[in-house]
Length: 414
Ligand code: ATP
Ligand code: MG
Image (tube, rainbow, N blue to C red):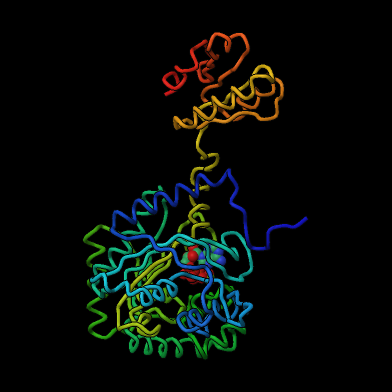
């Protein structure tokens, strides 16, 4: 038997209601904040990600799915969407619409990680990008939007952690500072972190090894902001206070991807255990230029949808959210199947969620199935009644039934 690949999961009909609710809430809230949906391809030229995310990051070094296509091109399954959206922004001149481009996306991402609870190889993200403004108010809006999204989903016990890496120059001095803090501990770091120490010291803060976490926990960390970046960061904090959004400053939130500068943030949620990051984001003021566009400041964030579903499922044991069926059409006597099928078509044309059993089984079996489905009404098409132009309508909620004319069926249901 062929099974789903390790680290991938079917989202079965039982769980799909939860996913649909998450997506519907996203579309609703993100539209209210004036973000428009964008869909970019799942495959891209691999260099898009190596250039933007950085070739010393785990995502690029260890987690990216790359293959050579029939034309000998290096293709990657996207590990995240920001680079794709920036590519699309430049390629389609989205900046020509004037002002700021506010975009959001929903879709699958791919990373070859060790699968575990809340970590898959194909997972899904919901994210937003605001390209074209360096206003601190946009940073505030981004965080406000992510908080509002969680609130609308009724997810509680989450925490916003905030930091600023500053501009490229500030980031370099922060990297120097952290290098000095980690230097006495290098011998005790894991092999990967020894490499990170040389190439990407900030990424040590994201290491999942217990011993590295302890070291990262123990080292001193502060940011080193120039006066411009310090002012921006102060305005972000003031804006969050203005909207009454709670947050904690945490200088260890550094986001290991190369493209981040300035404001960075993470949202954790208590019920998720070790993989408690539900959302991560930050500014990437240099990325548009690095990918060949004009110098354009930007900021974005991404939620992990599996983790949203996990947090929601834990809160309410959410199951069986699929749309409830209104009518199940049953047939007493094989000869009436075509009539019943026509009636079903009529109900569906009237917008009534309805179904029948197509196997010509006994009425008893059909009724049992209707019961199982938890439908509101059962229609029984029987010979005697049908000769009179009638059917039997059984109300499954109050267990009553009556004989009505076929043409009256809709008004008896709505
Ligand atoms: P982590 O530290 O958990 O590996 P990350 O820093 O790699 O996260 P980002 O690239 O910032 O994560 O992605 C944003 C969000 O996407 C994460 O906060 C998480 O909710 C989700 N996410 C990332 N990788 C996975 C994965 N492999 N499976 C499921 N969700 C994921
Ligand atoms: Mg990761």
